[in-house]
Length: 290
Image (cartoon, rainbow, N blue to C red; front, side, top):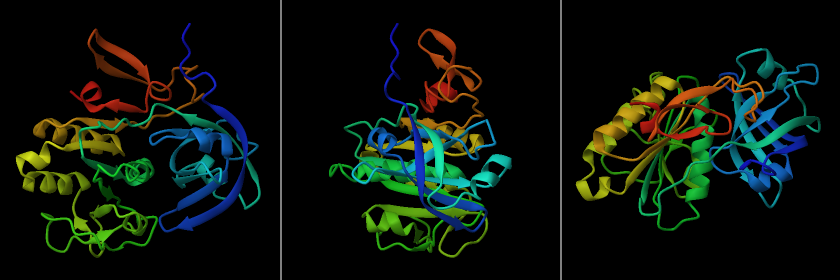
């Protein structure tokens, strides 16, 4: 029997290197996990033990990875008992994790203008994907991030000019600017320099001002809450653009054994149930939203 995930998911005792708090009960956690770091790809996640006394693991997307230095970086929000316990963990402590898990985003070679859309805790995979895409000189990724909580970084006016955006929409993510990647932010909270509205509305505005040739080079990647992903899928369908979405789901085992995270997808053979953890979390948007 073919087991595509055999020898690709590692169990590690990862050491906490940094654990930085941000506004809105958000934290960026850097872990020394060399086996996971060596195999991590944009869209993959880890399943980690938040506290030794808490048996159920929690799935958290990977935001950055360094193969050379052997670390991975995670962004999470304190929302329940597990993440509340995780927020109390200190430098030097060890955390049990399994990873990397899941199928990654797969950019199309001839689509040169990837549009990356992240909402809330769906932002990390977009940062990871942007980091990977900047290695391809033929790609010109553009990242849009939306949040109703304060952003887990200090938004600053971007140095990268993006034609066709509404006046005053200049705030971006400093890390992406440093990488030479354009980014813009959206929120309903009237943050300075951000688009006042949903990130999907900003994406629609940008797509509508592109000419036909430029739009033909776009493909969309997205991660975030289900309603946002549905709106992104509809936007992609309106413009006839390929779109990949990373789904969120409650997970028990995280490695495909329990089938507790299944979703219905459309296949050439008809509807089928797929596990978000190992069959996803990345799916073609047309198979999930139709």
